[in-house]
Amino acid sequence: MDFYELVAQRQSCRKFDTERIVDRDTINRILEAARLSPSACNAQPWHFIVVDEPEMKNKVADAASTKLLGMNHFTKQAPVHIVVVEEKMNAMSGIGSVIKDKHFAFLDIGIAATHICLAAEAEGLGTCILGWFGEKKMKKLLNVPDNKRIVLDILIGYPAQPLREKKRKPFGEVVSYNTYK
Image 1 (spheres, rainbow, N blue to C red):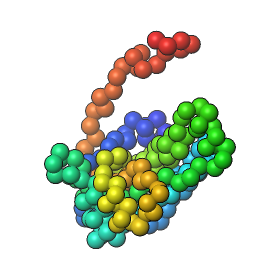
Image 2: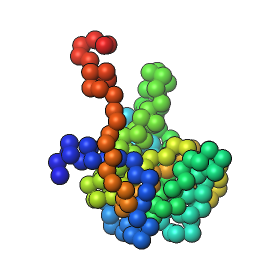
Image 3: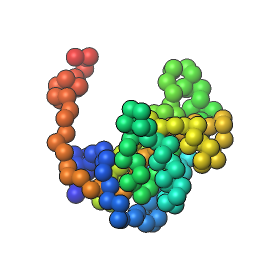
Image 4: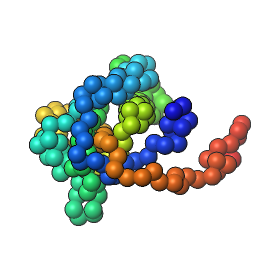
């Protein structure tokens, strides 16, 4: 599959095959793609916690779902959670973030998360990026220091759902050349 087919095929998976595990060699290949992703001033402001032990994975899944709003009720199906912790930016990236009023660490983590999702898709796996979760509970479960932030929880597993038609804004609505709209 070429890159454009990979991008067209990748979707947020909310139903995983609970009978299939994902081996660590595959996860390591996926994380190598994230490790190699670009970051502002090469700061690499991330740490990836792989949660694949079933009991801990279920506790993390509980922290990522809420019954009140029905958010993320599918999280226990995924055999792997990659929890992304924001790490300190290097000096140049930090200075640039202040001067340009852009939190480069979040941008960099977004790029790394994209690499994770596309690498997983290339491996025949599904992913779902979660930003809605109980951060305090997850930090306690995973021994993340209080002064750190958990930015994302990326679910990975074999999909158990068909491809859906992508609903996106028309190309001309989101792209212009040489001027805004």
